[in-house]
Image 1 (cartoon, rainbow, N blue to C red):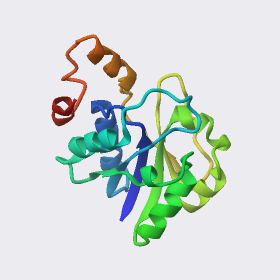
Image 2 (image 1 turned 180 degrees about the vertical axis):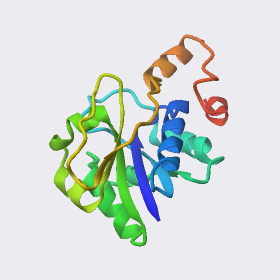
Image 3 (image 1 turned 90 degrees about the vertical axis):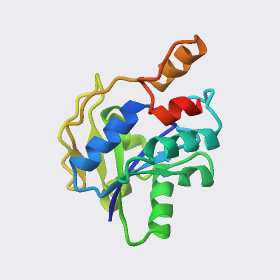
Image 4 (image 1 turned 30 degrees about the vertical axis):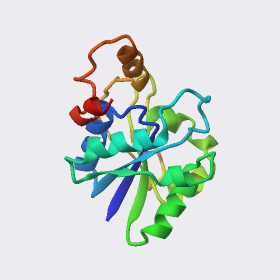
Length: 182
């Protein structure tokens, strides 16, 4: 099977994440997209995050109605800082029958050369890039790197958390079971 790994803090997971994952799965040669909950992005400053078990539980709730989307907690088992190359090697060891690619936004692609073992990720696994507002994508010249014209969905987990704290109704921003869980 061909699996795309969409990593994120999912703090919380929202409909934008689900729409993106579903779109990419339906419009590429991927069989599934696994939403990998990350403990801490090494390129982002430490910030208040929900406990990892709550974030993983919300991803499970959000994906249970869609068989092509799966929750993945593998990064929560790995040493911190969490690097994509380590995640991919661990997945490859555990699931040798599958092929893995990472799914990243054009904002991350702009800095991809700074990632640990970025060339090896491209050579051995592959990258699917989706657009992010304000970050144009130049067509990559690597055969394992592909751009996809996914819809731009500007929803922020931070905005959702702050709005919930203020007592605002965020039910249309979250999958129903995630909204109930929160």
